[in-house]
Amino acid sequence: MSTTHAVRPIAPTTTGWSDAEYQVRRDLSLAYRLAAKLKLTDHIYTHFSARLPGEEEHFLINPYGLLFEEITPHNLIRIDVHGTIIDDPTGLGINQAGYVIHSAIHQARPDLKVILHTHTRDGAAVSAQREGLLPISQHALSFYSRITYHEYEGVALDTDEQQRLVADLGGSDVMILRNHGLLAAGVNIAQAFRHLHVLERACNIQVAALAGGREQLQLAPQAAIEKVREQSSRFSHGDDPIIVKHWQALVRSLGSEALL
Picture 1 (cartoon, rainbow, N blue to C red):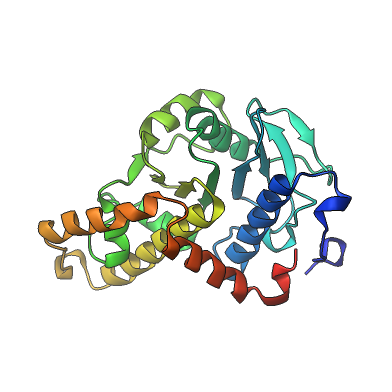
Picture 2: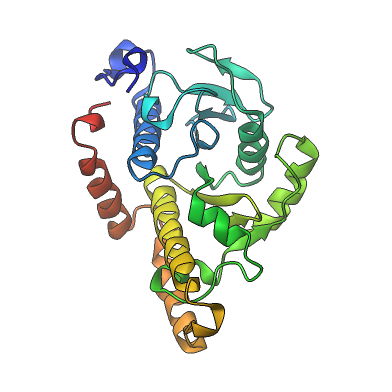
């Protein structure tokens, strides 16, 4: 790990942040660290964001150039939904694609406080498969009935793509970006990260299962698909006990790194 951005404890009373802002910064930083630990990263090229509490439409995102394992509460960049940088402690600026994707959803879906976007091998592989996510695992069934898709338009640098991105997301909180990767959102970081973690696992399983050929797959029966859709509705609440336990267990896995 770079010594320049070594992990260190930070007391919210020394930063000028409110307790609420500190909590968002800490949890978002932990999400970055967890993604690095779970190998859900693509070097410096993907991005997680979280809306800050308050009346202003500001959100936090990673500096363009730091690895996920280097992210801490104090080096996150604060920007508004129009792309204006409010605070950039590193001077590295932001990834324009991150602004285009995240600001579009933060503006259109104020209910979604957190947006996580990845380019993992298996997530990108499923995004390139014509049938998309298949109902072949319990993990996949958690999302199968509500996942949406956005067609690839090139690197997301043009703001005119935002309207189509938001329209394709609709009322969902999970989306596959075709020929690109995965997007998971939530009302808080714990919920969004659980969505991403389980969706990534569903893609792992699908890629492994397809190694035997499409004709060998056993699709879940429609009755089971409907049943799991109803069973999974509990995870629409960010404070569901399973979501909380999932997040707390992940944070414990970081050990001393959780002392951000």
